[in-house]
Length: 133
Image (cartoon, rainbow, N blue to C red; front, side, top):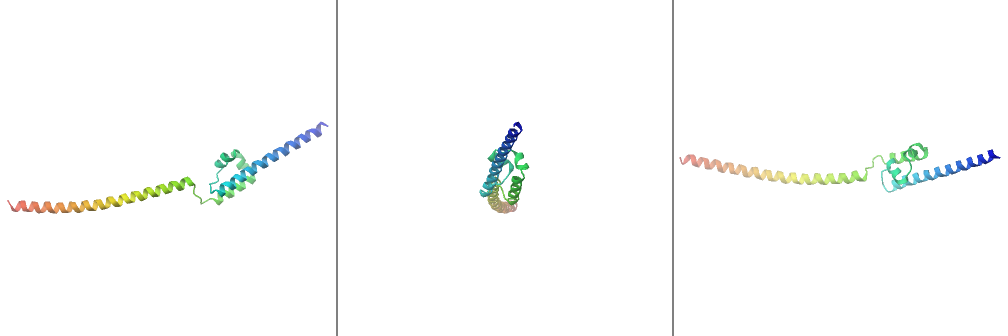
């Protein structure tokens, strides 16, 4: 009698564990699909934060790992939003620096022109001073 009861408990425990594992797999899959739909980069770290599941779960569970690998492969060329915003800021900074550079080049050309004009004037004045001696 005890053997049958123990088998029953064992079967119940297996069924509960299987059900719990299925829920974890479903949770992980839903989160991966959600991240893909939202255009978020799928990473194990983000999945851990979003689902509360362990890092080992994502690497050890073959079904989830296969889906994770496909998602990461699918996003291979994707740029993260933070990096994209950083790129935009850098481009704007480059544009501002190019504008500043252009302005400084014009200012330098004007100053060189003025310098040449003043040198000529100084040269003429020096000649006049010499002639008047």
